[in-house]
Length: 284
Length: 284
Image 1: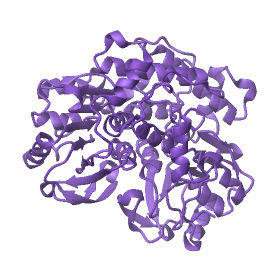
Image 2 (image 1 turned 180 degrees about the horizontal axis):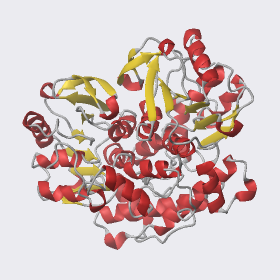
Image 3 (image 1 turned 45 degrees about the vertical axis):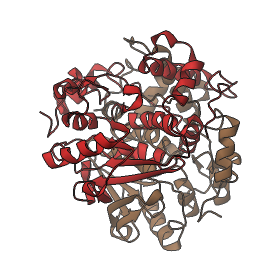
Image 4 (image 1 turned 30 degrees about the vertical axis):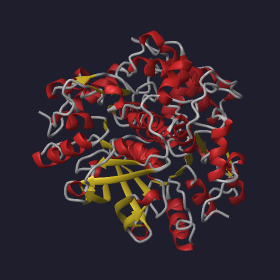
């Protein structure tokens, strides 16, 4: 479970078409990871960076890991469905879901996510994850904020996906900390005292704070968290089980790639998005 | 909404680091898409293939589109969470969820997905999606199969993600049809009369049948379906909103890339997986 050998990162032969995409993916990812870990000098040296990712701040896989996913009305299913799918598959890991009042929460688009615990009933968690949503007015309420602050202060790892970082930041716990966010909201973080970093995965304080970008970034985020918490091999196992070998059909996953007319569509729906200053209910 | 111009596919300049990965992604995807569309001769010609993907069998965006996602106890959340997130964002599209008895379903890992309708109460749908699961014994029951067969026969588009294709195939509707499946189950399809194709997205009969590979392939699947149903620009809009700009940290998303010891871990949990012959409850 804790195999951090470098034979994989060093590159084994690929055995079918798609070399270019796969190799580029690998080195693209490593470059990003290197930048995140503050290892500017390491850029281009895939092996040591990947090895570092697998070993740095890694817990012994036998130590139980408790993960809490915070749910609320207006949240976005896919923000936490990726992490959920990954975390549940890790060894010796317990994943819980909680909302202020417990029971069902009604996510974006009326999707009902059921049987959450009450936040007040959770004494402590090792890792807290706050996903994002299209309406943050519920988790921005003082009683929600108080529970999130309490659990985050007691957690070893404070994490978010998408604009869940705004919810965390509003509690004050991200003051002066680097954090990811959905691209449309990234520049709102500074209004809550955090430092927005436009990457797909961001960490600060040697892994005490970890965050993912918008929606689907939760998958990349969770695989990195998995490697850090349970070892690289457990993360690779999970990636293989969920067949995470992405092949987006279009070149439109980020404003730096998307066509101007497509960005304009998002700006129309979420004014300020292309300046990273979109607003949803609950966000000032 | 129906802009299928080729200026995007023809490649506009990229404006920051990551060129190699993004360009490779684009052409990697196009090659796969070309193969899927039966366009071996088109490989390497990005523009016509992407344009074809956007226009072939495309409905007028003003024609309402009804999508039904079939839920059942033992299903996998992420198999349909990606498609759900994408389909809900398409214009003039209605997404419903249904199970045999309606109400809550208990997915893999005890995740509760709530408020589904009763399958028998759905008269007809334009597109039916059957996601996969870690236990298919419930949707393989005769009463579930009868409802799925009825709705699939009446649907314009019959689709699945992951080993949901086994559930569809068991109804007989995929007889002689090409279909994707999770890599660990791909060779089980022939036992149900379908033709397993180890791609991330597969279609047959000019889009009447469309399917995605394992779990996360649901995202790539749904973006392709979105382009076909609502136009390429609507699909690109959705990709941008969910920030689908993947950067997997490891080289482990498919057995052709994963390390042998990681594949062995999956084989231990799912005997037969590396031969595409894994079994879960409900699968003979």
